[in-house]
Image 1 (cartoon, rainbow, N blue to C red):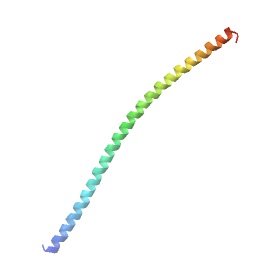
Image 2 (cartoon, rainbow, N blue to C red; image 1 turned 180 degrees about the vertical axis):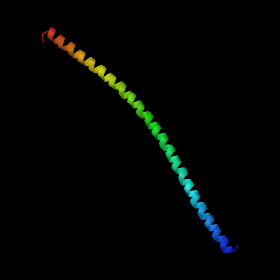
Image 3 (spheres, helix red, strand yellow; image 1 turned 120 degrees about the horizontal axis):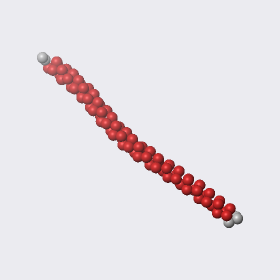
Image 4 (cartoon, rainbow, N blue to C red; image 1 turned 135 degrees about the vertical axis):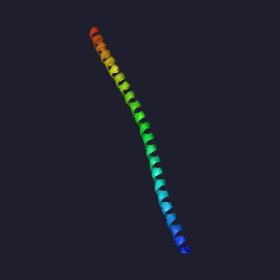
Length: 85
């Protein structure tokens, strides 16, 4: 092999190595991004599930308070009627 062939082979080998390495690096970066997204999605899913439970509990409290207000309004009406107001 003469010197020009060696230089050409070195350049070709270097370019092939660069493109293969770049593809591998890009694939690893994409995989890491996907893993991070999966972790984020899991975290947000847990937050959403916790918020759903909290909303359900608050709705139950609201219903209880509405019943108490209605009961107090009825009691107030009876007291007003009883006292002639």
